Structure formats: structure tokens, C-alpha cells
Length: 567
Image (cartoon, rainbow, N blue to C red):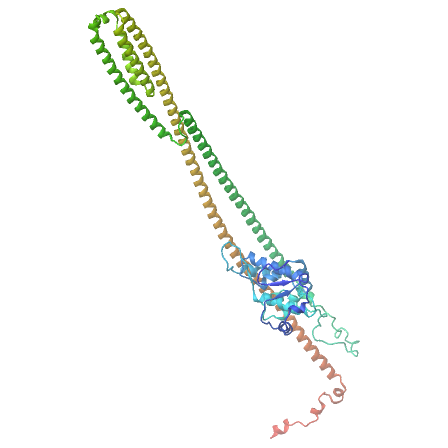
């Protein structure tokens, strides 16, 4: 395990193979001995596992509070949270809970220089690096790695240079940190006068050795204050837990909204794909039914059909014109040859009823004019009429009147069969056209319905997305409001903690006043005791008994006051 920061190289005995003295320069050794800070140099520092864990925790505390530097206050707060360092602090008489509260208030009261929500990487402060460097130099004299005791000793030796020394002294016991014997009581008599113990034993019994650590270590007032501060810490922890739970709930809601948005987007994509597949299937079916190229659109197909129908109508009209011209030629040739054969057209009309033929011809004309098939039927009809024209001419030129009539009758029958075929073809074309029109209309209606459905779904999805966007905007505003409230709460809490610390400091000062008064009273009592003992010795001495005064030499001089008065 190494230090999490990038500007400090901390080594442990497991990661360093040399001796501790190799990492310390003579200047640092001299600074550690005379109690003065030197110029910090970059290089590895040998510490133990506990100090390394405290430094990493101090780095984490600085990152959590978005501080710009890792200071000594962060290290002291981290030392109050690791069991091994807590044991070292308690062994030296430092009140760990009070030190933890003080350092936490100082850390929380600092305004973070780095704003925003991005990651921060605090640098090590010069005091923090000097503390570790001096502790390592002090530990190198005993050929060991720096531990928590070395850090505390450096804080006490460099009180004017390191900012955390006053905090350690404030919550330490009123005894020195070095391992010394019990402090001596205030100056008083070392023993009783054996000559006067029998008569005044109650007055001159020597004072017993008293321990002043127990008198200053704690009081009921301190216990009450500590309990109230512990209650405040529990309330703050409960509020922090509530904020954490609400943050987890809001994060879950945001994740649920994101998943719902992804699901809606996936459904929309799936439905659009299904709609496109169905439209493609319909187009493919239309292409296969019409045997048209796959890359031709429906509008182009309809235009091609319309152009083909117009072309067919033009071809049929031309065929009918040719047919009419040939019929007229046939009628003219019959009229021209009628006198030579002996039978006239009137005789033929009287012998044969030509009304059915004319009606049939009218039907054929309508069928030909209304036919929508290709020009093959018109060409076939023209060929048949040509054959009919040739047969009629041959019949008129070669046969007798009876044979002519029979040939005419057979020609009429052939014309009737041709008319029936034309009628059947006309019905087939009409049926095919009707079916095609119905199918095209069905396709258009289906496309219109799908387009309307897609438009409605698009509008619904647009509404859902707008509502989701509004919800996300409101959620963002709520998060900003919550962040502002948390910052305000943090500021208020820092102010309250500062006020509490000020009141606690005042209570500490008020508590120190009676102790100072007791020390002054002890000093006065010692002075009075020495004065009384000295007076007792003077009054009960041999010279006082012999001369009546202890200053017998001064009393032997004659008084100069009387001559001066008489003069």
C-alpha cells in the first residue's frame, strides 16, 4: 500500500530495503534536534503502517471536503479514527473525542476552493510534509520508521511552526508528554520539626503527595458537555443518513426514467420496422402481381398502365377505321358486281334479314371501341375480316345465287362467332380492370390507414418524450435546489459548530480560572507557612530568650532619635 497522492513518497519497512538513516540528510537531522524547520526536499520518507494509513485517510478526508491541500488538521482527524493511533493518543493523555470534534469542525468550516462535481486531487501542504519529514528524522536516530509518537513529539517541539500543535495541547492533559514521574506538589515543608510534633501535631503534619492529573482530567460539567456534543453528532449523522437515502431514491428514479425512455424508444423503432416491412411486402406483392420491375414505384406503374391503355385505344380505333374502310370497299364491290351476276342488293335484302347483322356489327363496334386489351385482338380481327372479304369475293365471283346466299350465311355465322368472342374478351377486360381498380383502391386505403396510424403513434411518442423532458428538467431543478439546501445546511452547521466550539473554549477558560486561583492560594499559604515557622523559630531561640530580641546587635547601639529630637 502506498500514499494515494502523487506529490509525496512514503515508504514502509516492507518497501524499503535500506536503513532509515539513508533517507535523512544532516540538515534534517539538525532541524529535528534543535527544533527548527528546514527547507523541504522531495524524496522518500520512511513511516510505519499506522502513519501511512493515517496519511491515506487524511487524503480521503481532504478529497471528501474538496480541499485544495492535505493539511495537518486532516492528519489529526485521521489519527482519531484509526485504532492504533487512538491507542497512542490515549496513552499520552489526549482526549480523542474532543480532538476529533475540533479537527472535524476546522475541516468542515473551510470553504472548498474547487467547485463543481468533478474529481479533485489535493496537494500536500508544506506543514504536512515537514511534519512527516521531521518525524522520520527523529525516528532515524533510533534506527526505526516514524510512528504516531514521533508525530506527536514533533508537534510539541515545533509549536510555533506547525499549525496543529495548539490543538493537541488544548486537548492534552496538564502533564508533559514524556515519560516522567509524578509531578511534585507545590513548594512546602519537606518534613516536620521533630521538636514540636508532640505539641502541635495537627498543625505541622507534612502534606501527603497528591496527584493533580485526576483533579484536572475531567469534571461533571465536561461529561455533560461531551454528552450534549455526542447527541449533536448523532443528529448530524442521522441527517446525513437521511440525505444519503433520499439521494439513493432520486438516483433510482432517474435510472427508472432512463430505462423507460430506452424501452419506449425500442418499441418505437420496432413498430417502425414492422410498418416498413409490411409496406415493403405490399410493394413486393404488387410488383409480383403486375410482373413489373422491383424498382418501379406505384405512381410510375399507374402512369405506365394509363399510357398503355391510351395506346391500345388508339390502336383499336385505327383498326376499326381500317375495318370500316374494308367493309365499305366490300359493299362497293358487291354493288358493282351485282348487275353482272343477275342478283341485286335489294334481292339479297329481301331474301335475308340483315337487321341482326347490323346489330351484331354495332355490338362489335362498341366492343372494339371499348376494348382495353393489346393490339393482338385488333390485328386478329383485321385478318379475319380480310379472309371474310376474300371469301365473299370468291363466292360472288364463282358460285350461283343459292351458293352465294349460303356463303353469306356462313360468313354471317362466322361474324356472329367473332362477335361473341369479342364480347367475351370485352367482359374479361372489364372484369380484370375492375379487379385491378379494386386492388389498387385497397392498397391506397391500406397505405392511408398505415400513414394515419404512424402519424398518430409519432404524435403520441412526441408527447411522451416532451413529458419525459419536462420531468427530467424538473428533476434537475430539484437536484440543484437540494444541492443548494445541502450547502446552506452545511454552512449553518459549520456556524453552529463554531459557536459550540467558542462556548466550549469559554467554558475551558472559565474552568481554568479556579485552578489558577487555587495555585495562587497554595503559593500564599506556602509563603505564610514559611513566615510563621520563621517567626516561631525566632521567638523560641536562645538569643531571643537572652536578649529579648533576635537582632541583639542592632539593639545594642544607642538610639540616635532622642539627641536629634532635643537638638
